[in-house]
Image (cartoon, rainbow over all chains, first blue to last red; front, side):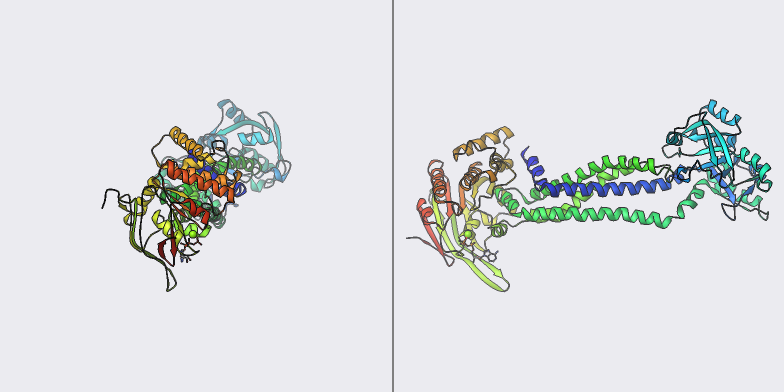
Length: 385
Length: 229
Ligand SMILES: Nc1ncnc2c1ncn2[C@@H]1O[C@H](COP(=O)(O)OP(=O)(O)OP(=O)(O)O)[C@@H](O)[C@H]1O
Ligand SMILES: [Mg+2]
């Protein structure tokens, strides 16, 4: 179709300029998508948290322990249906750069609390039977090529010494935002060793994970739990799992805000670049548009042609970004798994790429399209001779 | 009015430009007719308003006062949109610098005005090919303007001007950028269009040889028009 050919040929008339514009849009949208994905990754812990779970920790600080004896008292609070002790273990596999999260948990209650961690019953049983067993996420297994039965020794940081473990199970996440990079070992194993090596640290845990029946009663139940331990030597702070995760996230609220702002600034910059391209294109070809108008093409049709050119360039860039972003995010996910265990491009971000691409295309073309559409024929000819 | 009413009737046409608070009169009270089938040359010194007058007749520039009746329609009363439609049906344009679209081939350039008609793609191509054949370029259809000589480009432009079968052809210095041989060819072609297809032609020119190709020569001087000797 002639009109379409005219639009395509005009869009690519200055090949280098067109390709640079497309590349610019593609890079800008990829950067935008990557920043959004980082933000999503940051918030993943929050979105993956369940409203039916509470976390109780030491009111003074997350680094202060709680007596394990609190468990049975928490269990008795009305509305609580499960309690599992948990500890940040902080073990290192050979070298610090092999970082991955590892927790010591009370396995039986823990897996009841976290149904999104899917383990085969046989493996779960094998883990339960082995005090020195470990259960690992699928991504972690892939990263170190670990299989069930492999022996892995962690070097303790918080709990000194070498900790020989045997992989007994591999879990997979029920949801895309479930973290599959964690290693869990038995809380009882640590406690047993502590009893022998540093008895002062036995019988303690970092936090309790709590299941409740009714999410709407979370605030009330939290208050009741904390009331149990008021004026005791270790007062507690109970909050929803989400709030607990948010505590981590909000520490870096300023950074998150900065990334959000920058991600939109990038879009605005590329809009300015694209608008400049279209303005140059319109100015150079004003005489040609005047010729088309002379032949009888209406002003809005000419503006529409320029708009179509602009959209062609910006949407080509967006299409490129839709290919680039998942590939780059994948490379990110592989290399930065220790910082961002949940790192994937959300469908929402994938939809935003063409949407912002189209917005850039339209906005970049508005002023030049109006100019081209309202070109005064006689004056344009006087300029081109 | 008699039954042979002139195709173009210009009456009391005036136009001036304003530069700051200075008013520059370009055309003052011009009245004349152009009969259907006429081949008229407009001559005059540079800056005398030839292009301005031609543009007014062709409906691409606005007048200050007066009327231009063409085929019974006073085009000075038409809106911009109506004028665009009117131009596409009634006027073919030829410019000094050809003004072809550089990214399109000769054939596509000629086809362009037909996009505004209801013709099918096939019929458009047929018409465009016929127009190229009529100007003597049946074998240059796939060439881009940059691959054609000036004379050939002007032929393509003429094919584009006649492809939608307008009654009037306006040409502003159509030979101004051409060597003598090519200029003579183009003038001969315009003469043929006038004689054989009955096109009414209004041509602005500096070139007395070009003016000789016309039936009638009118001279513009200081905004006023007279029949040249
Ligand atoms: N937009 C404008 N603003 C101010 N003056 C203008 C404008 N357009 C044309 N003029 C003036 O109007 C006069 C007539 O211009 P026009 O182009 O019609 O002359 P011309 O006879 O075609 O000249 P040439 O033979 O050099 O092409 C000139 O003096 C020109 O400077
Ligand atoms: Mg002129």
